[in-house]
Length: 514
Image (cartoon, one colour):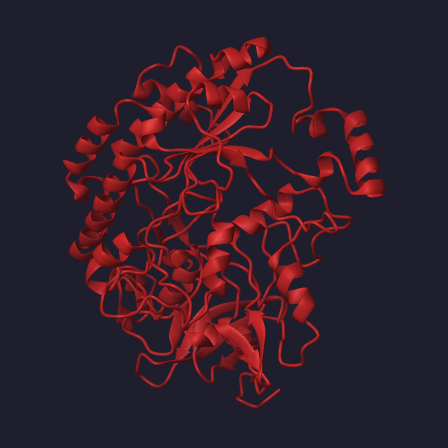
């Protein structure tokens, strides 16, 4: 199938991790090369550090809000409740609180604490402490269409593991005996990330149409002037990058079957994450607004046209491909979207499990939530370090990118922001480095970076069938991994932050050291 891409002029990349992953290449997986089992933040960081007396993991707790020093905006700690007993506990931060609850729940915790759009916070009956419209805005993901072709082939492909019991049993026996075979790779190991000019000859017209848009027409109604201004700065960057082909617009995994995801890598639509005013402590209201911007619809239509050309290449002729979905009767942009939408989330989904950018690193007057040093605007002693800080979603799965953010050296690392983002979006009066406190230090030694897990890594932990036993008994059916206090709405940044210091102590709700 790689030959089909070559036939269409898509080059093979010898190294995709050099900052220019546009082409087709072998995709590494998060697998321990020695044990051939899933490698995660749990196995790579926490398990190796769990013996340390200054590292504590608190499970079965859910963060309810931040605490403050009096009536000020200086954060002093977090409150959490025990999921089983409903007993409340307060953690007092000695230096600062770091939120790492993910792009859907970090905004919720901030809003529950009175930090966020005033109208959203007050609608939930919460007193506004910092009116910060950027909290919960700018939500991005990689919307995806799942296309299907009927093909004939005589070689194994990923789906055979679920449809051929004999093959699956033999593969499992091989893995258990030798740590080789299909079970060492959950999905295909080949992928293509393609720029817009590689996909369509209509790039120039598409970009010109994008530039002429009235931004507010396609943005959520709650967007303020500051948010619109920040979006317009993002749009200028994206128009340049997509037009010149310096970033990938389409993710196209291929593994031997007729099911092909087409994932939009640089969407122009924007979503929101807001408190549910009727149940603020329940799950937040997540509105993706996928494909509301006509540019995203045009992108998807061009991707599907490319995929059709792909299946008509001479390289795939022996597979005798026949289009099933969206079907050859869907030719126009509206027809394609309508047919895919009718198929439900297994056909067209707003999310590829890569939510990001809901608390973006941008100036406050452009709708930003955090500054270049990750501090939350309008507050003191509060930082965010998860996928929500990315101003624009990367053309990539988020795991490695977010891992790099977590592990960046505060003083010696290069600027976090891309130059274009630095000039047009991020604040220019602050160095784009992460604070030194994000490194785990103690007793004169540097222990490494904070253990954490990304949304993409979490997704992959369920996709990989290559572990001898479940990744962890702390994974529940809702897909939440209890690292810190819990992924999602439930991580306790203060507890985790304090655990990185040798003199760290937590306190119960009465303030006594425990």
